[in-house]
Length: 159
Image 1 (cartoon, helix red, strand yellow):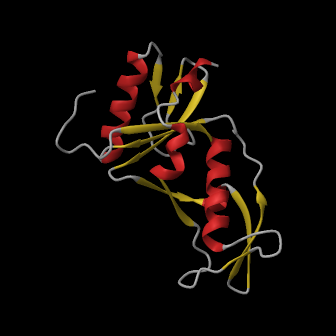
Image 2 (image 1 turned 60 degrees about the horizontal axis):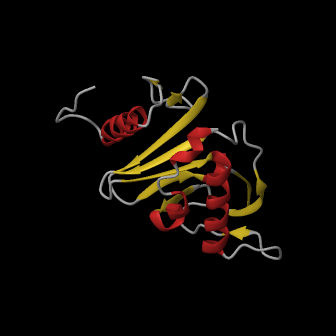
Image 3 (image 1 turned 90 degrees about the vertical axis):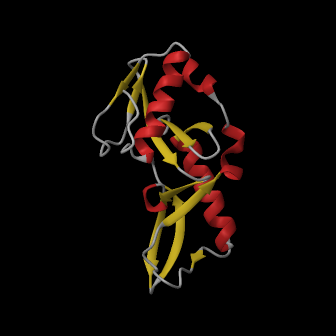
């Protein structure tokens, strides 16, 4: 898979990660379509979701990870969703920083919940998430500061 000038950010990042995984002795199957719940299969058994950024943050949709009800244009955080693949590996790669962060979907869910709760002041007494521009928006961003504990966590592939 050679680089071309028309490669997307996603394609460049995927290629870098696949090369690194192979260098570390893993077999990698790359799924061609980006619409899959998984982007790669490592060693024939480890499903991997790839998240590439040209900067140092990644945009996610938290309704897939958290149970949130919208009542009267106010989001109410309920609980963590039951994940279909909690042990799926997520690879976050920053092209600008040339850093990789490796964690499970369960870890991603916990980070997003912690960030959303902290940002909006959600606690046991206050479950409201007020999004003034669009109460149905579920966009959030994970930044390198959130992912740092998982930097170069290649040992996750040794299971």
